[in-house]
Length: 128
Length: 128
Length: 128
Length: 128
Image (cartoon, rainbow over all chains, first blue to last red):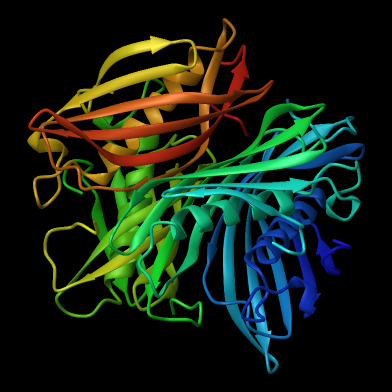
């Protein structure tokens, strides 16, 4: 989150929104946000949305995600939004969208679907 | 590639290998490589592996990818390897693995499957 | 569609809904709808939703899809719904949900995200 | 498995192979194997490959899978092969390929990457 200068704008039960302002360090050869940044935003919003529904002392880990890159990251800010589709006993499923804002107008930039796992009373970030 | 200090180690027709040495700027709260870096490595190796089979004047764009995070990125280097499964007229399908090296030993860290699109005679990086 | 006795209930520009009534031939060992049927419903609804936005003489082909199986297919009917997220020049991205109806109540059974390709003036169903 | 007349050819620890002979009931409008059959083969081979490494009294459930449809299912038999990439404490990750055999020659038809969950001492097929 620090490397990409992301700001956590909103967290509610089952929902999260993250903003990433334009920074020339985060862009590829055309001056657009790099796909790696876009996927990091999608993954992080899913993580916080899932974490918002966890029990105390639990941590959350991304198992996998699938991301479609839909429009180039050409603009002044990325906005990530994620909603929990299902909060199961062990696994949580989220859908995330990343929008690119250009001249104040939002456009869908990427869409993801993710699976996360709740690790109860563990701090080491490992499922294996 | 520059932001994550990735090194392009090997590119052959339909194959690519990338190395990313440990850097404290690329890690999350436990000192492990961040999932966003791991997915960037997977996506970039797929991009170069696909690009190695393209026609002159073509550019390549990731359509989508699916990544399983398999082991924590706990180690001194990430190694990304990608192979082209199918090089179609318009679309290319790749499988990538990201390994984490700890004390000189490689362990599977993530596995991805990606779809890329060849854009002929275009330089703007957009399918839409 | 015939093998699984699916009924096309609604097609609008960028949207499709399909129903599959319970049939003992479509179930696995517990009497639930088989995962293969659930994924077929998700894939077919995405196909029709995309096709609804195509040009005349085009055909549509699934490039790839990712499906999360969320609840068992335990009920009297499957309902598939799909929405087009992006209708690009070549590729279309859809999100689909499959609901299971039990005692008249809908429950989310599966969620998918798909990429489809428009084949203009071709009838052979091949991208390669 | 019965509906699609699949034959379990080989199961070894972490590996499975399934064959599905041509049947006009399993094909779409061009006489090719339907995408739903192809994805069912990929999902089932992953299930058996994972199950081969499970503890006694465990059952296995597909959490999600991502499938690329690579060539049309034009031929006399489908062959599914799946390998376990990682057999974790709770989750198993598999990669599967589905080949189409035409005039005795195998061609890659689809490739999948799947996540499965081991349910210990439970028989109801539900993670939720």
